[in-house]
Length: 405
Image 1 (spheres, rainbow, N blue to C red):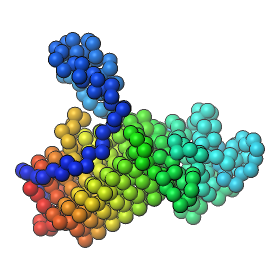
Image 2: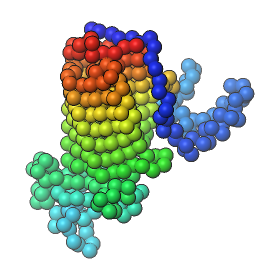
Image 3: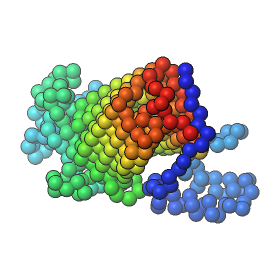
Image 4: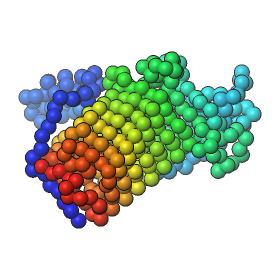
């Protein structure tokens, strides 16, 4: 086992686009009001307001940030089935068979939710969430959304999601202009399933939350969806080009491909503020971040598990060609991602950490991972700086490909 512990590093503060602006204006006002108050007075006067911004529990030992929840990897769905087919032209659809299918995906989701939950089977074709940029496919609890049907199947196992491509697209305006696309193609939900789709053409270039997660936005534990057999491609965001998970998200991704997405930070996905998600057997390839984390960003107390994930061909203009990990003195606790049997090949960072940049007290574990063909000015495979801690077991990487300072 090899352990790298850095002593010094350098910090480029030029880019800081993560302020949440108006969302935390109230918290700023509270902070200014309580600066000189005693703790007892502070709690009695402002405790309720503060809890709005500090999810957790209070005990005799003080405040615990975040939620103590596990990743949900499967959802028991009611047996009801609702049907969606883009070719359906019925003026009034019941959605209870292929013959009476809805033409709109959201109509199927809403019908299943109103019935207490169920499955929504979606036939091949391209579907749009609405006509304005604020539209999204809104997942709902106890509803599973399944794509890849030809439109005649009587069993879910008979579908072929690779052959019958089912596209959820945000390209609602001029096909040649991404700037009029929806901000988020999909909004996640706890105990909901997305399986067998291509999610594409989101453009999260707006303000506050509309700048995060062009393909899928998972904001909070209540948005912890299960995603399987799905491709996220050609999405853009200021942060988290394809997927953005925030504030205790516990999403699960299995056999998911995140490819050719772009962002300022986290070209493929961003996992922030205690978002301890899990990825199994996924492919993160060809994504680009202008600043950090070509494939992914992990920060602020997020402890994701990456199992058998391939990172290839991702790129950033600064640090962390495949992944950028940073702790940032998190009140959520340490940032401790674990990579197990992962492959990093052909990723590139213009500055440091061609595959992985571990930074600012982050504690990253690499178990039986491999690195090849990654490039950077410093640490062609890995950079480990500013008190970062890197633990490697059974991992193939040459010492000269690791920069630790």
